[in-house]
Image 1: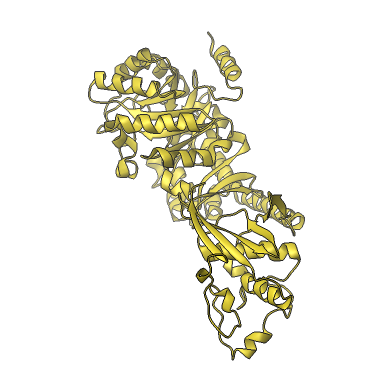
Image 2: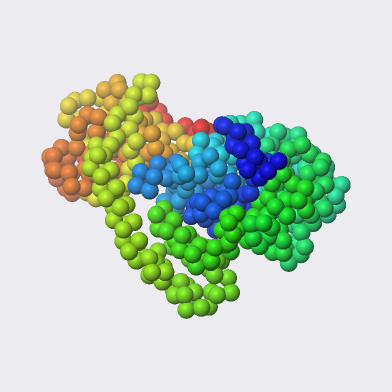
Length: 499
């Protein structure tokens, strides 16, 4: 079958589900497999691109955020770091790789990202401490039972294909025994780095082991490990495939040095590739230090050249662009992003329209402390309004998510319930968010910066001789006797649960 026929066959088989036969893939590489490298590799001809390995514990704490300005989906950690960023262009061809040693936690992460990626992969081959600590990566090779538990849980629990990436074991017999157990879990493919976990790129890749694996299982086998001595150009990828008898090939270091290795028309110059990479980095607001790292990998032995030294001294993407003569591209892209940001802001001055979820009114609201610089919090405004109107005081019920210990609160006011759809880092912030939802739905002031003074709170504070209120103790706000809400289980309840 011709290469074109293979590609057409692959396309026919990937309707709704990614196919791993007859494909060239960008391997998962820590710090390299971020969005700019993945998109550039796709441009040059890669069929599938893997993300860098992302640790389950960190990912489980992330919130999925639609970034309307960049037109991406971001998975954002509690410290506001973007752990994983993806976009529509790669949605059907990006494989999310995670580091995990726990079936339940792996499933939480897989379900978090499954609607934004084409497949889920488990790293079982990386020998570096980053991966092996906690029993992840190559450490899993010595625990086949755990491997089986993780993969079975994922295959059963998510709608997208599940794969894994391993290294070979000291004996062929043990290696074949392991891959057959992996095959029986129902995974869609297995990637094999043809080296032992103690071997490094300077050691020759064991093509005979990969070939034996390919013959022993019926699922696609993706050969990996040929970058140093076997894969230097696009034509070498096919030769490596033949040498291993594998269904597909996964390219790591050769693609890190020059992603145009996937280009059937031949390699482009490193300078040209770096310029195209940098354009993606600017377009998708890649972190400057990650941009620097990836560009330095492409420079390789030229990293001490004048361009390399300028690159290493740069602290921002703007400064990096200056070294490559892309100042105008940077200005143009930033102007476009700013225009989009302003347009979105204009259209979303009141972005969070209330949505009824059962008997609870919800809004997409996050409590940002810096947006409420005054002494009076949203909870205080809501409490004081209820007293002014001679209504029952607001009651808060808070739940805590087990996997990342994040909080979500619901407030009941005049028999109606209000909640933010977002999870907060603390119980206090979760209650403030629910109070904001209630205040906005009722059209009441909430104490936000720039808000016109309402007179709703303040008078009774002066009667308290300037005593500072305690945001945690809202029932005593401007009151004469302190009593904490938690003393009344009907007024406030915190529940731990897993979602």
